[in-house]
Image: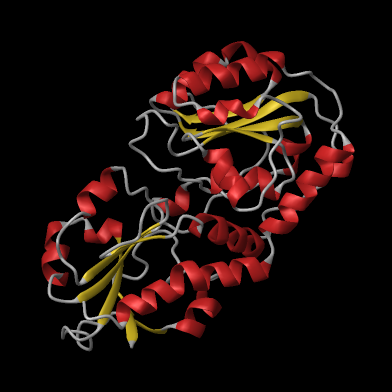
Amino acid sequence: MKLVIYHHPYQWQSFFHSPWFEPFRDEHFDIEFYQPEIHDHTDDVFVTGCNIYIHKDQQLFLQDRKVIVDVTWESSTGKWGNDMTNTNDKHLFVFGDQGQSQGNRLYCPNFFRYQEALWSKHGNYATVTPDTRIPDKKFLLPINRGRGWRLNVLEALESHLDESLWSCVSPHGVELPGYCPKTGGNNKIGKRSDTRYCANQWYDRTHFSIVLETQAGQWKGNENVFLTEKTYKPISMEHPFIIMGAKGSLKMLQDQGFKTFPELWDESYDDLYYPDRLHAVKEIVDNFVYYEPLSQHTKKKLKYNRKLYFNRDIIHDGLIKEFVQPIKNWLTSDQ
């Protein structure tokens, strides 16, 4: 059964049209790109992104078709999950966060972990020089768009910002040192800074990263753990990290096989919701022993994490088990 990619590319990057996924995609699916004069009947299975599907006219056009809606870049507890909820069993919604797959909702909580590793390798983003690092700053805190709780984090850590590398492109206009390339292209996306880019100096000059994830646990149980490139970048760069994210973020990483850093700080902050989580993170930063070199034990963890992260067999097997096969099962179902 072939899949018709509707509105190509239907979002910035995705499994179904990203170059790092194409060989894998074409191995498991028969792909065509939408042409109105060819795909004007309802027998084909369409693939579209949530940014297209969210428009009511598009839902109307797609209502009688079998459709895979790619929501892997969004959380099912945010606006996309609420807006996507409907009773059309012909439409499969594929989310990239935690949840119980049932009916027409498929959850792939490790999708970002696989995607980011492949994307990083494809773009040659993560070239590390950990053995020559001489940190002169306490932490790395990259923020692209500062809003809501992210600005609260900046305020809480204000006394430490002079001894850190930090950015808040919007609204403060502060960027990290050095050149950060654009994503390319003449559209709005192409003019953005490349959020996957990793400058060695950012990691060489800092002791650890503070990751501000997409969600910070501010809804106290009404959200899922959703780990994105923000978490996986320090893993790829062999950099210790603290996560301002949902409760259980470290637990999810450990379940994926990664090692965390209780020898560096108290990781009980992972049991807390925001704002208690922020208070605990601030205490860690306040008490962190500056300029103390990493132990061999910690360095081995960092190298182990990077090797695990880029393990192609794990990525391949995980994508088949958690993404490809469930979609194929749905395609051959009676829906």
